[in-house]
Image (cartoon, rainbow, N blue to C red; front, side, top):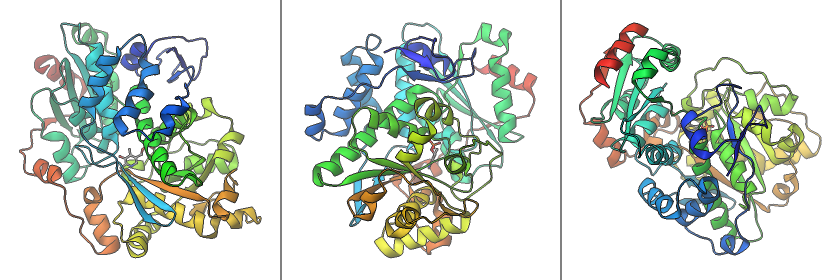
Length: 462
Ligand SMILES: *Cc1c(COP(=O)(O)O)cnc(C)c1O
C-alpha cells in the first residue's frame, strides 16, 4: 500500500514510514492510504469472526512489509479479547469495546500499533523509546499495550493531581519497559516537555525517539475491525435492516476508522457523530465553518477535545456535503449525560458509561422523532444540546423503522463509577483486571516542569 499525506497528495511513502513518523513533519499533515480496498463479497457473506476480519482488513495496508504469517501472529497476540454486540431494545445494539486490558476501546488501536512498531524495530540493536504525554486514558492504553513488547520502551508523562485515582493507578504501576513521570504542571506542560525532546538534536543523537499518539495510522486501521465485525453480525441476523453506527467522539479517530471500514465494504448505511459540550464537529456540520476552540471539561472526559485531530483526515476524504449526507450529528451537555445514563438504565436495564451515554441519547432522540422533525422542516438551534439540522440521506430509513443503531460503548462503566452512581444510583461492578491494578504499588517518578531536568533524567534512566 502506498500512503500519502492529507495536505500534499504528491507525498508517497510506505506503512513503516507512516507508522514510525506518526505525522509528516514537513507539511504538518497526517498519513492516509491512497485507497481503501474492498473486501471480497464471499468473505463478507460468511459473517466472519473478529480475528479473521482483522487479518483480511489489515492485509492490504501492510502488503510487502509484513508477511501474512507474521501479521496473523501479531493479530493473535494483540486480541485475546472480544467485542460483544449486545441487543438492548428492538432497534438498538451496544458494541462493547471495553473487554481489553484497560477497559476502553483504545486498547484495539494501541495494541496493534505496539506490535507493528516492535515488528519494524526487530532488526535494530537499540530500543525505540516512546514518549507520551497524557491527560488520562491514552497513557494507560499505550502503557498496557507496550508493556513487555520487545524492543520498545515507554515513558508516560502525566500532570500530577489532575487525573483520576484509577487512571493514575492504570498508568503508574507498570514495571520493566514502561514507566511514568508525574509532572508538576498541566497536561500542556507535559506535552511541551515531550515536544521539546523531539526537537532536541543532541538527545535524538543518543536515543531513538518516537510517539504513540492517536493520529498514528496504525491506531486507526485496527479500529476498523470492530465496525466491520459488528455491522456484518447485525446484518446477518437482520438482512433487511440499515445499520447506523453511533460514535461517541473526541478526536474523531474512532469515527474515521468507521469510515474506512465502510469504504472497505462494511454494510454501514450511516453514522451518528455524537459529542459532549466540545461540539466543534457538530457545529462544523451545521454551519460549514470549522472553528477549533479550547476544550471544556465534562463527565465524558476522554472526549474533551476542542480541536479534533482527525478532522484533518475526514475533510481530506469527504466533502462537507458528503459528510452531511452520511452523518447525523448531535451534542449533549453535562446534565444531559447524567440524564442519559439514568434513562438508558430505566428503559433498557443496560448500565452505560458517560461516553456511551452520549451515543445512547443521540440514537434515542433520532429514532423517537428527532429525524422526522428535521425532515418536516424543524430548524434546531445548534447552541442547544441535540441534533444538528442537517438531514442525512438515511433519514427515511429511521422514519420507516428500517434502521438499527449500533452504539459504540467505548469504556467500561466502572471506570467512571462515581458519575454512573450520581446519575443512576447504581455502582457498576469493577472487573477483576481493574481491581488488580488498584492494588499494585504506585511507581510514578516525580518530575519538575523543567526541560533540562527531564532530559537529564531520560539520559540517566533510558
Ligand atoms: C478516546 C475516547 C473516546 C474518543 O475517541 P476519539 O477517537 O478520540 O473520537 C471516547 N470514549 C472513550 C472512553 C475514550 O477513551
